[in-house]
Length: 119
Image (cartoon, rainbow, N blue to C red; front, side, top):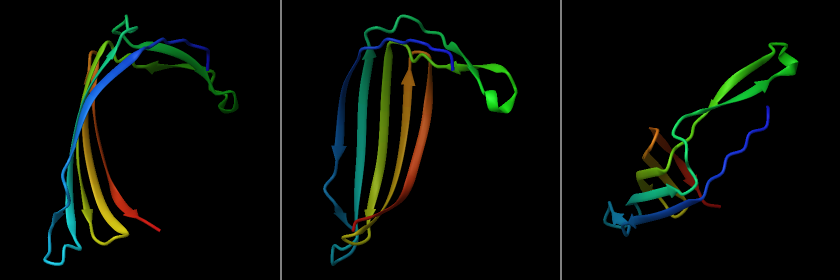
């Protein structure tokens, strides 16, 4: 890939709220933990709002060079994330997370989930 340089100086301020475990049964062995996070970011060195192209090649494929896009998020960014952990035992939990990011030049949405084991 051809060289490219980008400068950024990002400051972030945020807040994360976690609840104490909420018991779902009488023995309190199964519990729910909701979470919410909010964050604001500002990039003091962001001066362009467009995307930039990078030139790349894959010599082994024989396809020559091609352009790929790199996204410039711009000056401002805001994130909202929420999730929940379902504790099934001391060593096992299910989790699910959603997040939405909005920035000067676009937005994105993400989600995740899975099982956590402690050894």
